[in-house]
Amino acid sequence: MKKNKFAAIFLLLAMLVSLLCTTSASALTEPEVSAPNIVLADTATGEVLFTRDETARVYPASLTKIMTVLLAVEAIERGETTLTTPVMASGNITKDLEIDGSTAGITAGEILTLEGLLQCALVASANEACNVIAEHISGSMEAFVNLMNTRAAELGCTDTHFANTHGLPNENHYTTAWDLYLISRQAISHEIIREICAMKEVTVPATEGSDARTLRNTNALLGDNQFYTGYYYEGASGLKTGHTSAAGYCLAATVERDGIELLSIVMGAKATERGDGWLDVGSFEDTVKLYDWAFANYSYREILRTTEVVADLPIEMGTTDVVSVRPQNSVQALIPNDLSISVFDRSITYYHEQNGEPLVAPLSAGDVLGEIVISRDGKIYGRTALVSTKSITLSRMEYIKSEIRGFFRNTAVRIIIIVLVLLVLGYAALVVRYHILRRAHVRSVQAARRERDRRAAEMAAQATAEEEQRRAFVDDKPAIVPDDPFWPDAPEEESASAGEGASTAPAERDYFEEFFKN
Image 1 (cartoon, helix red, strand yellow):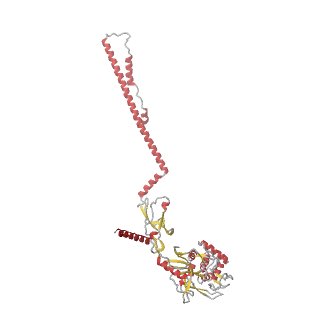
Image 2 (image 1 turned 180 degrees about the vertical axis):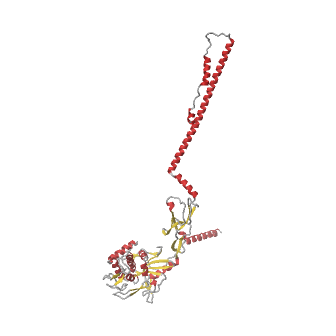
């Protein structure tokens, strides 16, 4: 019984762990492709969906022409030349070219527009057209190749070196699938390149050296051509094919479906005979598999919505105590369909906290209060401002309170208040001291008066007793009055003077009390 109970608990825990794992992380299986070097990425965001040995050094073959055309288009956009500029092919047109290499049949002395040369290079993969473009842009092929290497370094290519303009084999001409991805992504940011590489065929006007040329695109994803068939892919729009015995079959391709645009780089693929005169070309097959895998397993999803309340922030001096903030813009990412949005990290910054200040009213709806960054595993998927969801008006009462608080926070005001308090306390101390001294003085005066009255009473009693004694003595003797009375008058005089002193002596002045009265 206990074993069954433990088994049930274990099974329940296993199910919970399984659910958590499937909802928090993607469980994608890799696409079944055979090419040794691959990059598959979303062109809009740069999100890399799949790679295989993308940093290994490889020969680029005719994918080199992507850089050649990119430099020409950038020169056009800088105003150094134009699409309609006539360009004459020099005698160096066949430099470093193989007899059986891809060509548009351009000959020395022939004049084409720069646009016609770009079409020959991208659509028909014409090697000689690249040499003509190079001399037109830089004056010489050597200078142009140096420019190619400089631009590659600027784009972040770390293991790329070009030795020619077209991609024919050279031991000093190499790159990686990742570097080609960087170059290709930059190339498709230019509308001129997008338009040309999406052409299934194009007619180059006749020249003095040639009739009009009708060129068919070597990219079988755009539709069947004279070289390959059976690889048409809906939404494919470019970019460039390549093949030499050293490089194998290579393809830089773009496709767009349901708002998703992908860029793939497939290098070193192989080809086999079908038996019907056509080839099964690994670069096309793998690219189709990559696209099918991506569209089946990935989609653009909102990982941050504008309707989401990110936080409620405390606000001062407002009619309410808090204000809600939301993202100003949504953040979307091309992610696996089974990936939970909860796995993304959020980094939030509030500007008032950065400044060490409180958030105070008034606020208007839409005021920017901070920003939020969405990331995962160190990769940033998007960032947007955080704005207030509603307007917060200023509270008059809170404003008055704030002004009062601010007034009393002023250093000068605090010093003045402290001085006033000290003065009041000093005055109070003086008043208290005055009352204490006054009471002591009053008690002293009263004591002196009592003592004076007591002494006066004693002296009056003594004088009365002496008078009675004198009278008693006189009554007992005959009334003989000598000429010179012998009875001393001193006591009487002293008594009289004492009486007079008691009645006429001036009272002692209370100078302390007079000072405070005045």
